[in-house]
Amino acid sequence: MKALVCILLLLETFVSVVQQQVDGGLNENEISQQISSEDRRQNPPQTDTLRAEASTDSQQCCNLEISNRTQSQVEELRKENRDREIAFSASLMESGDGNFGPFTTEITITYKKVFTNIGNAYNPFTGVFTAPLKGAYMFRISVFGHGGTGSSASIFKNGQRVISAHDIQAHDRLNSSNGVVLILEVGDVVYVRLWSGMRVYDSENNHSTFSGFLLFPLREDNLCRM
Image (cartoon, rainbow, N blue to C red; front, side, top):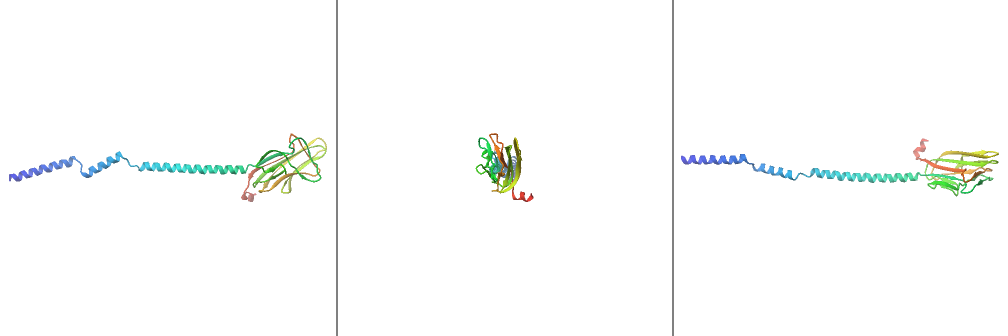
């Protein structure tokens, strides 16, 4: 009987010790969880960092693409603007002074002293302007003369008279000017013709001139609305 009591006391003591160890310590799962948590604290996940790096790379690529497109557009605009740079201005006499005319028939005036010829559309050897671009163009002429005969000239487009500058005076000096806006197709020509029996005078003061420039280019739909 005493032996049985001793055995029961030993079992109770053993159970108590084991229970204290369990209550005061951590089981295997808790230990594993604690180790895992500690590992995460020491080595945080890289997901956010990777996402941030990917976002930065994507933004840089996007910025580069936008920059390339912008540069390309700028170059296209520059080329387009260069194509639209069309203007000229010239006077009759390249040097000295004197009269041009009179003649028995109308004759094309060659304005030889070129002040401006942006786009090289005006030819000083023929006096002809050739449109390199479809558009609306402004042209102007001025004529000057001395009394005794008239000073008269006309702007022609493709062989057709458009406008004239005309003055006749018996004595002293005379001058006249006129201008017009013309719609030109590529290859259309514009020039000035002196009237039969008339003359124009020029000197270093550049009295008699012919000028023109592109106001703006035109497309087919612009012409349809006019």
